[in-house]
Image: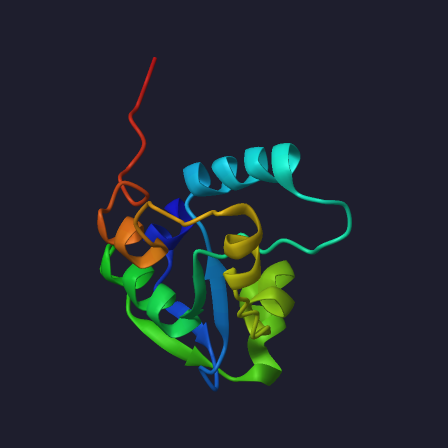
Length: 130
């Protein structure tokens, strides 16, 4: 997030259909504990509290805090713009936690990614020490 303060613009992948899942770290920690304690061998567990956040929404809140404009990045230019993260950003990686919730009686309780980003603590300049 700190790098975003120094950019002239923040790119978002075009055509903007990509979604990403998210979970608060404390909800993930509780799910991990439940999985170790209660999950039978074999099932795939999804700890996706938010099952499909539009990458556009994530980019807009990240750009808003340091007041950096968000622009579209053509897929052909994505690797040059996003570097190693281009493939990850281009994925539509929505997932449901419904089966995990039923199996382990797990329900996410913390606030979501966009709400967390809106609080602004990721964007504060680091304190100068020394």
